[in-house]
Amino acid sequence: MDSFVIEGGTVLRGEVEVSGSKNAVLPIMAATLLTRETCVIHHVPDLSDVRFMCRILQSLGAVVTMEGGTLTVRAENITGTGDYDLIRKMRGSICILGPLVGRLRKASVSLPGGCVIGTRPIDLHLKGLSALGTAMRIEGGYVHAEAPGLRGTTVFMGGRSGPTVLGTANVVMASVLAEGVTVIESAACEPEVVDLCDFLNAMGARIHGAGSPTITVTGVPALAGVEHRVIPDRIEAGTFAVAAVASGGEVTLRGARPDHLGAVLEKLREAGARVERRNGALTVGAGSTLRPLELTTMPYSGFPTDMQAQFMALLCLANGTSIVTERIFESRFMHAAELLRLGADIGIEGPSAIIKGGRPLSGAEVMASDLRASAALVIAGMAAQGRTQVHRVYHLDRGYERMELKLSRLGARIERTQGE
Image 1 (spheres, rainbow, N blue to C red):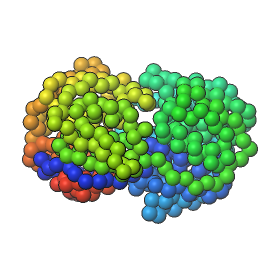
Image 2: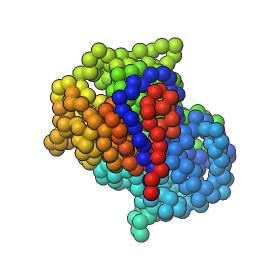
Image 3: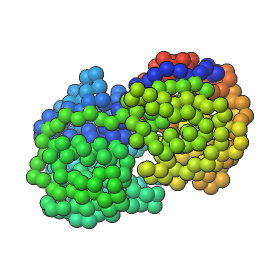
């Protein structure tokens, strides 16, 4: 397995181009199954999750080509049964369920896998699709769905930890070809949901209210092919912003959308960072003092759970005590034990991590447990003195496009090594 070897103590400076959003492009790729016509998607990041989704679409019968960040999909003749071995390896693959039900009125999709960051059930997906008239059963590791009569209705998508993003996407994609009007209450408000709805509306769907807690979908008979550019990845942008501050440097994020990063930028300012708009780009740099924080993860537009680990690494460097509370996933502190190996002082009390910052970090061998934990360990390794080796960076490759190359161009001493 590949690992990153990092020589710490360098300062990051320069510009980095923000890649297309992983969490936006995966459901958009699934939405191409709703039409027989060709769809062209630009600004597609070269990630392992994207390559997996390409293989899943091909296994369903779609013709898929990827060249230079542009993805072309033609799903003229497709089947409703997904490849078990492919789908079970990736959490995001569940988003093919909605479009298959919408177009074919039936689907057999294996239960998905993904990062080990806590229980992420698909009960809200199934509840939403059932409300539209889909008969659901789980058998042999598959979700089997049949919807001979798919009709609009009111669907409530709120869950224990707030709205579900992929669940909202699945219900939206199923309902665009349903009869009548569907009203989705407690819908996820994330920019990735808005991007999906923009893509679908360009195909001819009639969706209103994306980005708000109530989305209204009026069904149409068919959808057409479309050309679309994916939004920039707000989590990648946030990760590089945190890395810049942790290193004591300054990085300009080309293509970043500050309107998608409100809570992250506010917490960086609160920690003492400098955040500026310059020539249409976002620049983030370290201030004179790094201050401790209290933060709690929340559904959008609150502080994103996908930035929690990176901020924990940053707060290990701030003099004073910080408190990070995780309200979305119950097991998303697995990176804390690895940060301890670098010299951090972190205690876990229920859903909160207590970080006593300001202690010097020193390099060590650490193990990544999930996608965002990988990024946190890279940030901490760059801030530590000495050599850090981050193992299992295949997690990181799921959501960051050529991260080591981008960091190297900013001044980091980091290289990828191949292990056994």
